[in-house]
Image 1 (cartoon, rainbow, N blue to C red):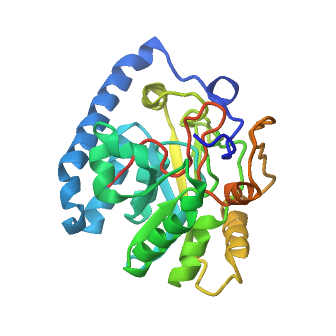
Image 2 (tube, helix red, strand yellow; image 1 turned 90 degrees about the horizontal axis):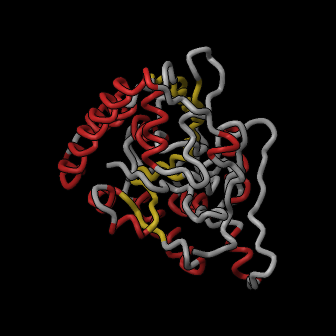
Length: 304
């Protein structure tokens, strides 16, 4: 793990609402079983993903979210249904991944280690582009791979903040992946994701941050009542609308992340870092944070 990669200050203890209760146990168990069945179905069908209609993949992705007990409220859009497209969104939860696939099925950017994971690895191999987070000098090759997928008419989805945040705080969009959109001459589709509770207030219960485990996050979500995921498909950024990747990242970030940003880089005072790597780390859309468990680009739960 490269210690200078960006991270978020959010942690489960400091940021995340507890939804557990004894009365919620039967509901949570039923929801978890349904989610597992749907995910295993996705694993079995993932080798056939290229032949499955986009509408079916969108339906499956939304079904995973609803099975977890989360209602979906979509506004704006729709996103372009064909042609190369870079989908960018803020990153709060593992739920963000099926929610984005519900906007338009896309290849997700994933850390290379996911290839070796049980269940997740089987899906990732058939639907992801892989990135080596420990080799910042591999960044140009990663950007070229993304650009190639975009030129071929595929959609690619990334979370340019570089880490999951709790939803009440947020980072900023790192610019490297936006170079791929410029190189391929394709539009950028910004998407804003927010979570609300039954009272309509912002909820951090779905947040998957810090040293949180996937099981703990799943249980918290499936135990909750009245969670709503708001997915806002924002105006498209057309090719040529920005002069360079910095301007394009800023334009997308201004739409997805309005209001004040709270970004605190992880401090590693005694770690020697070259000028080249410092520059790359500002662009590299990956992070581990102090606990080394988040990368912000389809961190731990891939989708087809």
